[in-house]
Image (cartoon, rainbow, N blue to C red; front, side, top):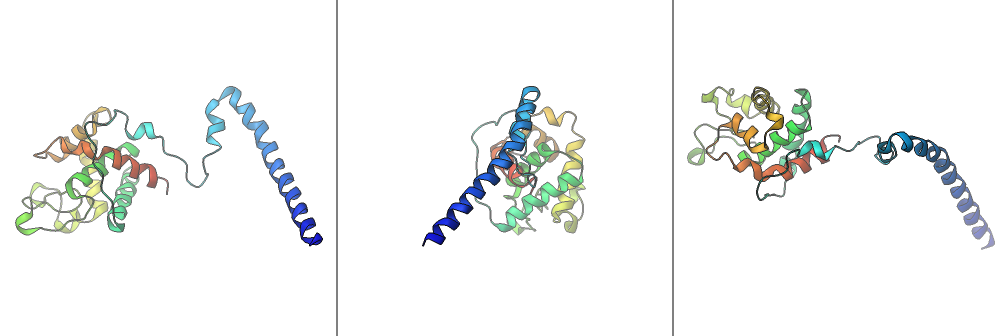
Length: 200
């Protein structure tokens, strides 16, 4: 029993010494950095493998109207991640991903929809409900999440000043929906998805 107590005491002291050594080194540097760069100390709390996303970039204009939210299954979450990956591939930022995901939430609830027969809106398909007859691509293309996202983003890039527009206006300019204000309700959930998955 005395051996166990001695072992625990020794391990406890070693742990304190180790922790003290770690805290003593960086604390001095963090204090020095705080004098000139207040944000530097806060940055040390972010994990190196998953830096935080600047949430002010995700919703720079504030949300418009009541917000909706749905529970996502694995497929829907995978489609959100595919939109984020395609946004990065297009060289666009987190805000573009928010606009894209909010658009897909409104159009398809992030489900990669095929032709729905009588329930179909003309020939609209895929995450963004793009139409082959309107020049978005073939059915095979617009039901590919990467292709569909890149096509949407190509349209978004052509909207002058989209970064300074409310989300619903930017999305509507690309989509030309019969319900132009409906994109706004998904901004918070889209921003949460981008914040969670952008650096994952």
